[in-house]
Image 1 (tube, rainbow, N blue to C red):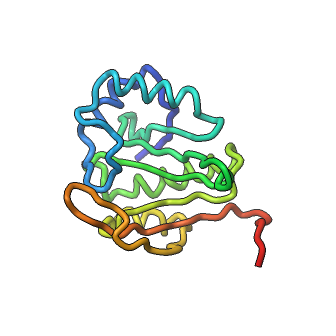
Image 2: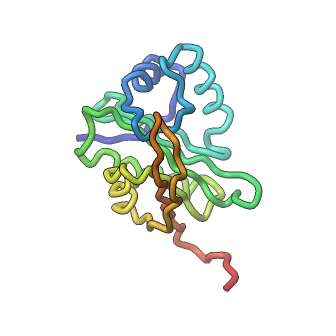
Length: 174
């Protein structure tokens, strides 16, 4: 199985629309519109074009030539500017095959090399144990839990905070 991260482009707009309409939204933020329209795809591809490689990396997860998911690391601002937040989704047909573990490995390597960041943060709803395992397999450490931090579809969830530090000299005050 070949797993590649590919830059999003206008050529992949149909795949993006399909992906966003078929994605399991149980543990995603509410920002992604549904149904996902051509206009939504145009907006998102424009945003990606403006930010990719500058303060974020946005990639399609391509498995054996088929778009199976999306993954990104977006650099934060202000005093958090050396931190990037990872986000990802994968179509259910591709779950439990090690695909996301490999995609996270690839995007973290690229983000630390290409963006001016020293850490990557992952935020995961507590019941999403599969996503927690993906991060842990990639060297992310569970740093804490925010109780009752997420309200989604009529339910309240705890939010798990994960962090991965770039292997470099760290700035810290003890």
